[in-house]
Each structure stands twice: as structure tokens, then as C-alpha cells.
Amino acid sequence: MNTGRKQAYLVVNLRESYGTCRECGTVDQELRPYGKDGKWICFACGMKDEEEARRQFEKILGGPKVTILDVRKGG
Image 1 (cartoon, rainbow, N blue to C red):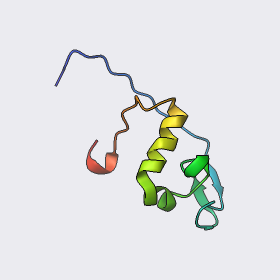
Image 2 (cartoon, rainbow, N blue to C red):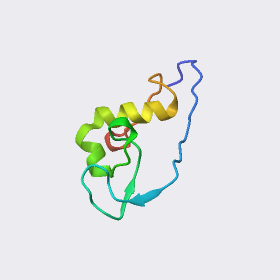
Image 3 (tube, one colour):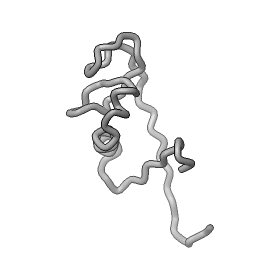
Image 4 (spheres, one colour):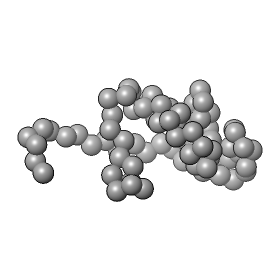
């Protein structure tokens, strides 16, 4: 459906980092800076508090005026 509004898409590719999760201690995990205060955590820990992960992701993007599509729910 075309609403007449322009849409912009941004793809963020954070450098991949494998290491020890700062929350659960699991080793050899792909980490992202989505934990409290930007801690590098694994996906499983990030999904324990999805709202905190969202806040950290929004910080990376520059603010909360970003629509984050959840591909698990069909966008």
C-alpha cells in the first residue's frame, strides 16, 4: 500500500565479535552490544530482556525514531 510517505531503510552491520558473553559467560558466542550499558552479550541473553536490547540498538542507530522490523513476526 502506497501512503505517499517516503521511507528510508538503514542496514546496520556491526563488526562481528566472537567471545565470552558478559552476562552468562558462555564462550565462543557471536556477541552484540545490546546488554545493559552496552555490554557485549549473546543472542540468548539479549532476548531475555528484549526491551533493553531494543534500547541499546536504538542508541547505536541514534535514537528512538527508528522502526525496527521484527522478522520473526513477519515484519
